[in-house]
Length: 260
Image (cartoon, rainbow, N blue to C red; front, side):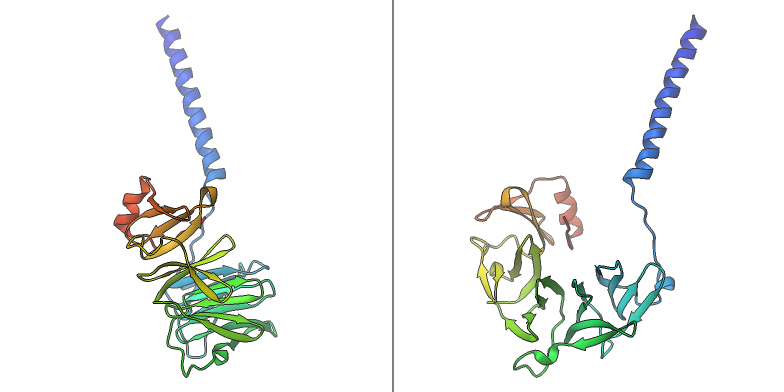
């Protein structure tokens, strides 16, 4: 009887271990994505990559400290801006153009003779002797392209550039659903409507501030992530701290960005 009991126990334990191994195998094959690392010795460019975009053909574009990097799945290529600026931002449109921004420079790349050729748009800026800002964000909004620095929003449309200033310095422009929202430091959150900035209700309070991400959330509300004060829910009129175990971690180690 003892031997039979021992055999039954071993069989039961074996079934449990088999089930655990099968579950682990399923997680490994289904739940864990394939990750491939590309060291600097492979892509042969700068250490820092500031922005990433992908075009309709699946080609990847990277804003790098030494210029614009491209990767087609097999080959890496590097392209430099006119004054070898750092590429801080990159975006692609449906027509094959690649838009980039850096210090004192923004424009687009188009394919000519199987190579990318750069066209600067800075010369279209009205009444400005020299652009002295970094372009941190680029958004494709239909036929218009939005370039954002910490002092100005530039809108490129119909081969013209229009400038939008705020009541203070900007942080980052966020694309939230069909809306474009930006924090004006010490003034609150503003929405870009056409060529005007409109303040959102009750966002001029002290916190949240230093907003690094704004994401769509439940029932038309927004999830707002700050660099050092954690997460908040904004329902269109009030802010509520988002109670989650992740909040302490984000406050301690500083949130930098977010994605839905």
